[in-house]
Length: 282
Image 1 (cartoon, one colour):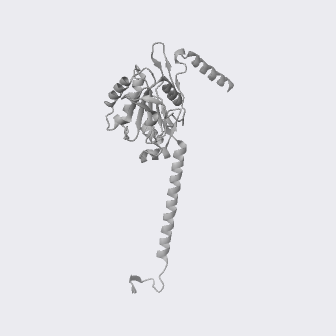
Image 2 (cartoon, one colour):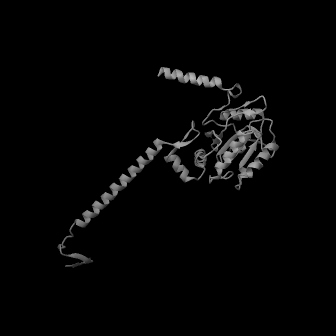
Image 3 (cartoon, rainbow, N blue to C red):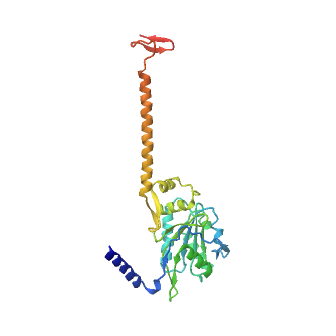
C-alpha cells in the first residue's frame, strides 16, 4: 500500500511538472453554495450599466456562462453545446430561467457583446429569449471578483489569447451556486435536473422533481446528475411498505366479508334464503 501511494504521488507530481507553465493555474474550483456578489457592475449588450442583482433577483434560476467573445474555439463550443442541449429542454430561456453570459476579457466591447447575442438568438429562437439571455462586459475588477467567486481560473497568454476551461454554472434564484457542468456538450436531462434543483420549487416540473427525489443526485466531481443508489433503495423500500400495507388491508377486508357471509341469520333455516324485507323463500 505504501509503495502504491508513493507511486501515485510520484505520478501526480510528474503530471504537475509536465503541465506547461502558461497553463498552470487554469482550472475550475467548485465553490458549491457560494453566493455571487449581486452588486457587481457590468454593461449589458445594449450599453446600459447593470448589476448582477438586476438579473439574479429571486425570481428564477440562472445559467451563468463565463466566456470571452473573441475566443477562437472553446467558448464557441460551450455556447453552441448549450444551445444544442436546450433545444430538447421544454423549459425556455426568459420564462422559467435566464442565462447570463459574461466576458472575462475586460477589453471586449458592448458592440461585440450585442453582435454575439444576435448571433445566438438566430440559433435559439424561442419567444422571450431576447429578454432572458444577457451578454455582459465589465471592468477587470468585476470580472475578477465574479470569476474568483465561481472558481473559474483563467490566464492571459503572451499572444493575447486567454487560456481557460469550459464550464457553465447553475445559480439559485437568489444567486447561490447550485451545480457546475464542465464540458462543451450538455445532456438535456442534466440541464433539466440542474434547473429544477437550482429553482428550489419555482419551476413547475413534477416529473423532474420526482426523478431528483427518487433516482438522481448531483455529483460535483462528474459535473452531472448520476443515479443515487440510496435514493433508489429508499424509493423502492417505501413502495414495498405501501404495497404490503395495501395487501394486508385487502386481506382483512376479504376476511371480514367471508365472516359476514358465513354467519347464519337468526330464524332462517338452512334451506331458506331471504327474498325481501320480512319474507323468506324455501
